[in-house]
Length: 297
Image (tube, rainbow, N blue to C red; front, side, top):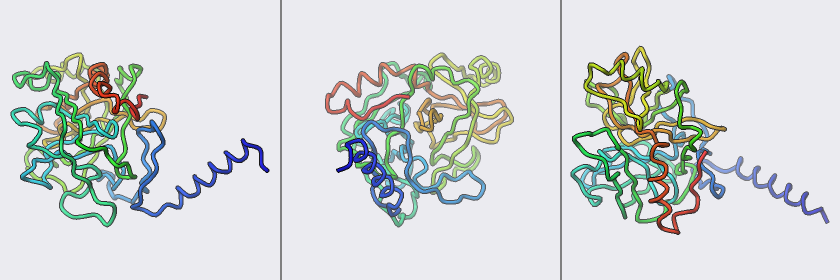
């Protein structure tokens, strides 16, 4: 009989071999409290702007009930029940006006894989200090789904940041969503697009934005390219701004506001997630059944 340690190592080795041999489209096992890890196999994408299927399994599409298939806003899976998004997506509406599409990829055609799932909203929690007159201040919301998400290689949680990621100035981050391809063309892509941006110091952003009637506050972060050309745009609202920490994807920002799309020295404004961690955790952990499988990096 093998010693206990050898038996455990052998079992782990067999599990890894099974996981590597798993056919595309079948459910991938997600370890307890795992976050920010993807298991989907990468397909080659020319140009690098199109997100491949399963590259961002924490991304969800928030859609109007009468117009399924049309993306209203994005959101981020935090655990089996909770989605992080922007408050302005829901202003003037009720939770019954929306559904959340999990494992969504192509909005116009069905993928030859495990289909996307539609979830109704059990609870909508907009930040109490969000006001439309200050449309990008405290622009954060939480959505509790009516049923638990069934994790797969196309549906997994992102990590929440720890306070050590409060200062992200200078790092590269990724924004992803089904938003418009440009400010002037109201055309949305069938599949999500991604862009790698740089986080700028808030003071620099306020200097650039002083003629745009916008101001970056302490609970914001700003990201873009000084020369422009890449940015979030209409329809990306509520989606994640992601950093990588120890090979895990961490949602450090929520798409909130901007003046135009991808203009030079006009970065986008994002809700800084670390500024709202106590508020987020208070709501998610209020129900004891939601306390598990929420992790921070």
